[in-house]
Amino acid sequence: MIPIARPFIGPEEEEAVARVVRSGRLAQGPEVAAFEEEFASLCGAPYAVACVNGTAALHLALLAHDIGPGDEVIVPAFTFAASGNAVLACGATPIFCDVREDDFNIDVADAETKVNASTKAIMPVHLYGQVADMDAVTELADRYRLAIIEDACQAHGATYNGRRAGSFSTAAFSLYATKNVMSGEGGMVTAQDDNTAERLRLLRNHGMPERYVHTTFGMNLRMTDLIAALGRVQLGRLEEGNKKRHDNAAYYTQQLHGAITLPRELPGREHVWHQYTVRVNNRDAVRQTMVENGVGAEVYYPTPVHRQASFGGSGAPALPVAEKLAREVLSIPVYPTLTDDERATIADTLAAAVKGAE
Image 1 (cartoon, one colour):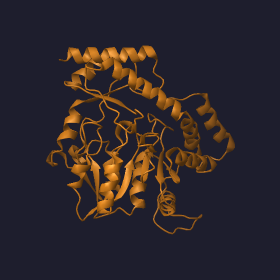
Image 2: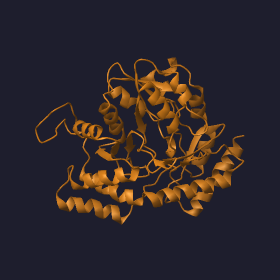
Image 3: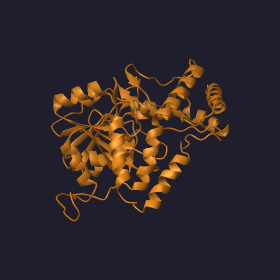
Image 4: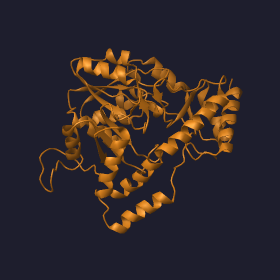
């Protein structure tokens, strides 16, 4: 079976973790500080603040901008539930907007129709590894004086007009086991100014600027040095891994051109292909055929967030593009450790499955 994801790890990661174990310094320490500095440099951001996972990163980012009860945050409906859950965790209300068919990302024109006096922030999600239209997002945010929270959990190293994801605003990244930079679990928040960075540090550490001095509300969302050590090695592999993902995506695009609706890398953007996601009719039948023939294929995501019971369910207003994509999208393996033979098998199996489902 060719799995949908496979960790990109080796002896360097093992040694990094062993080094921390031998040091006896396991909690948030020098490895975390170094990882934060290196991650900020990757993104072209002044600061990065580490935490326990990507959902916590989104939650912290929102809290750092004083998002709370009575506030609304505009979120694209075609995303993982964590985007909306982080808003709920603040006591605020996620207001879902539609997405675009060309890049699966936020439809800023539809987002604007959701803005009202309670709207405090907009959360573009850089889905599957391609940065949203940040010029349009920034223009909208500036016009209505909204905070921007980038959900960059799938976009490590992705660029928009030469700027990296995480450099436009406060941004959240996930380090989950399948991400382009992974540490099993973990999260990172980038910040563009001193005040936001300091607020993030307080919020993730019980509101303590120094030991046993509590100046504000905070939680225990700290990263361990074990996670940071693993993440630092992974960060060093990112360029190599993203290049391999790009090569795999280019191979699929060449092999499957004309047979299926393929994902697009839009002009001015550098897609990092966290997922290679096609669109097919009879999607569930196609997926079943692929799995039966030994190729992992997954649906990200089968139900748009606004249709989930926890966010409104069947009574939520229609968002037609998000709902259409949820019926059609199918992701195939694109990770760096795929062999040439595996790539060929995946492409051939998908093409045959699509033809058989016609």
